[in-house]
Length: 352
Image 1 (cartoon, rainbow, N blue to C red):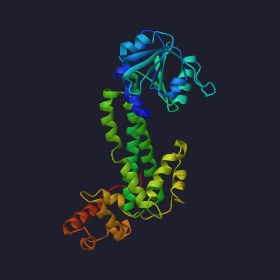
Image 2: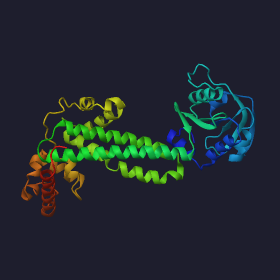
Image 3: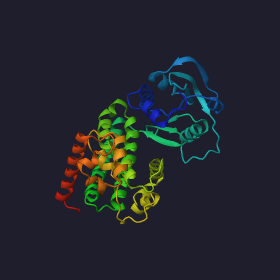
Image 4: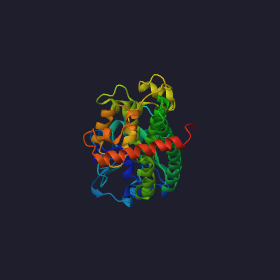
């Protein structure tokens, strides 16, 4: 199974998997170890000594027993067969590493040189560490992982609440005709923060295996609709709006460093919004997307027809039916939806 991603590798190393059980047995028996999770010509070239096993099927007990010898262990790409044991690894010593222990230095250099996942088990710290794709990831216990993930979910919940508050504020100002780029950029910024935090939690949750199912459900609840909200706000405010401009803006946002993302002015700059406090007229994509059972093509036609949210919100039923795909029933539903939005904007305070 060559070319697997780091998230796929972590999923296969999750608590309860056969490989994780084998690594935990190595820790329990008070020994260190080095396990190469795959083989290619570069692995062979960096290997010396040891002995070849003839079709030895991988089992946790067999892995733990073979690790009692001084050398490392090489598995096939599918992790189903132990290929070699008691191997002495000699990776390129010029590969930089900040590791201090000999086993961990070897593991990091070997992972970089071969492109294969390598796990080092520390005898002193009683901890397994994965080196792969330039990353170093400690394989904490399921209890420790769950504690970290719960904290992450609490942080994500706070971020999502701030995003929802910002979006409600944007809605009130848009409906009142008082929108500025500041309110739009705040929603975009917070949506990007939620998205990043969500991906971090997702990566960690994968490492819990089946024990992470509840966390996955909670995560999905917290990130639902975030990507759509970000896209709709960009559709409303990017100028000029050309083919691919939303995708390019999303890529630029994803490239921002965390400190830059926390700065509203820097977020505005990459979106070509010159003045955060400049009044601006949204096109109406985001609010129309909240109308029930309105197909995207029809929404796009409505926005093109009216050109701005202000004209759209004041449109009569007859004017709405001028748009192809908007019959009398749908026009009446949209008119009622607009009136509810306007009622909310009038009933709630405009400033927080």
